[in-house]
Length: 411
Image (cartoon, rainbow, N blue to C red; front, side):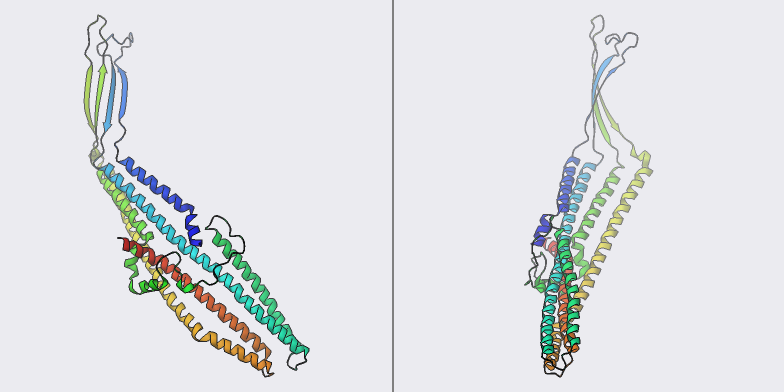
């Protein structure tokens, strides 16, 4: 639900759509010729009388001029705007993938804070039971149930209350940060799904977590991530720069223009008819006379193209390095999770139970009982952190791999 709301309420995505529409319209406009020019004038009007029929050279001239495209500039401009529009579309896809990652991380932070309060509640319940048990033994005058035992539990409870208050604050802050994606604050007693299986989450992608792990083992990051939306956006921008280079080369070609005009003359004062004039002309500019200027423009366009190609390689390298880092992190976290789930949790639980049994039989130390139970809670909390960190790492890998795989599958 969080992902769906975030994607639906993202104003930047709407802005990308407007930009893409603008480039599409610019591309259509680029196919048309320049506007024709209309000119009119009264020519050769005598200054000694300002009469239109006084001199035979006086005329009203109306002309039209049309400049023709320079080489294939119009078609190339259309290609350039199309590439820029597709680049914006790819930026929108990159934005959507990034939102999925960010919302997934913010949701996991909320989940972690919420589950920590649950764990601390269990610890508080445990310490409260220990306090009741100790006060009962103290009231029954057991020799080892000293008042300092009661004080230790009460101090532990006070320290826990401070931690619980801090955990509640972290939970509210995480919920507030998550609400930034919805355009409105999260109100009420909302909480993340307590039964969420973090190991199966892929955060907005149809691919299962198991399939993602398989892709991690068989895909080579550098080749795969060339199809990532962030990299593809730069690649499409380089295609637009390639067209700009072609446009710069077209500027070395002459541009032609044709014009036609009609000159009207009035009859002579004696009534003799005068012929009107029709003129037809052709114009051409001479770019070879400014060849150094054209060469510099071509060189600048080539430099921009090479810069974009370099940006593409750097982006792919950076994404591949991130992928390798997250893969190693996921492997390490999996080993730590196995250590906790296959041994440490049971061992700590058995130790806590053994010390409590010994204490109730007057053969144990009360401080050890408290420390063992607190350690049991700490192990459970650390396992929660490991599981959340694993989910964040899979979320990051899903952001890197799955959009790239989808793009390659559509080719």
